[in-house]
Image 1 (cartoon, rainbow, N blue to C red):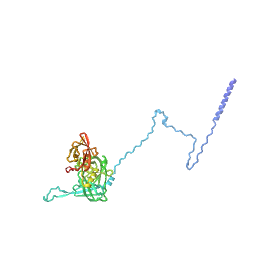
Image 2 (tube, rainbow, N blue to C red):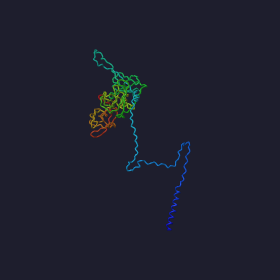
Image 3 (cartoon, rainbow, N blue to C red):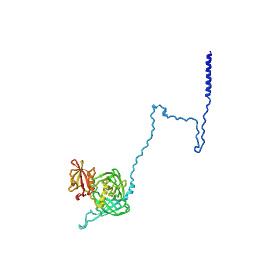
Image 4 (cartoon, rainbow, N blue to C red):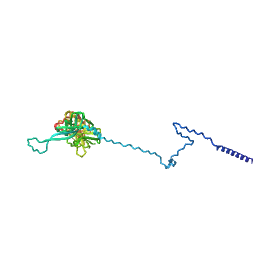
Length: 398
C-alpha cells in the first residue's frame, strides 16, 4: 500500500513539472528589431521599405510536376536567321555609254562608181559615173589622231570623212589596210577633244561575260547594244573576206549596218574586240576581231601601212589523230626544216593544244624572220624541228 502511494506521488510530481514547462514555452518570444527604412535622398528619392517576410520561392516549371516518363526532352528552338540572298549586280550601261561614246566616230566615204544603166552615149565618150557612199563606225586609239575601222568601209575610197562625237567633221587619210583581218587604220589631225579607248586583253575574255557595242547603225547617231560572249575562237565563217588568220569572238549583241568597225567593250570599259559584221540579219549572231590580234595589225599598219604575215609552207588537215601535214611546198621553211607529208604536229613554240585553225593563226601572226620550234611525231617518234619563218610568195598571199 505504501509503495503504491509513493508511485502515484512521483507521477503527480512529474505531471506538474511538465505542465509548468509547457506554459513557459507558450510565452511570446521577443522579435528581432526591424531594419529602419532608409531616408529619401537625391540618388534614391523613393526608397523601397524592407519587409520581414521570407522570400517567395518560385514554383518549378509545370512540366516538372508530371512524371518524367511521359515527357519528351525539353529543347529550346531558336529561329535560324535567313542568310541574305546574294545580290546580282548588273552593269550600268547608261554610265558606260556616257563615258565611252566620245571615243566612237562615224565614218563616211565616197568613191566613183560606174553606172549600171544602159549606155546611150556614143562609144567614144566615157561611160557615165557617179559617187558611191558607204557608212561605218570607228574609234580613236590614241591622241595622235589614229582611228581603227573596218577595211571594207574605206577600200577604194576617194575621200573619207570622220564625224566626232561632238559633231566635228574632219577629213581623214588612209594609213593602211589589211584585207585578211578586215581592219584599216586612219589618221586625222590631233585635237584636244579626242578621247582614246583603253585596250583590254581578249585572251582573258570568258564565255558568258557581258559585252556591249557602240556604233552608228544606218548612219544614225550613237547607239548602244548589249549582249554576252556566246563563243570564242570561231573560224571558217564567211564575213565578206576569206581569212585563215581570223579567230573571231561570237556575241549576241545586235550589230546593224553601220556598226562595223566600231568597238566591242567589256563591262570595265575596255575594248576587247572590233565589230566585223552580223552573220545573218535577225539571227542574233555577230562577230568581232579579238583586240589582241587587232593591236598586232595596228602596230604593223603604223610602221609600214601593210601587214607582213609569216609563212611556213605546208598544207594541213585535221583528223582524229591530230593535225597532219598533207603537203610540203618547195623552197619553204618547212622543207628546209625537213618536214614530210604524214608528220603529226603536236606543238608550236610551247603551245600544245594544236588545231588546224590555231596553227594557221600562229603561223601567220608569229612574224617574218622569227625562229620557232615545232613538235613533230613521225612513225611514233617525237622530235623538235626548228624553222625560220618567211614572207609568203605572191601566189600564196590573201
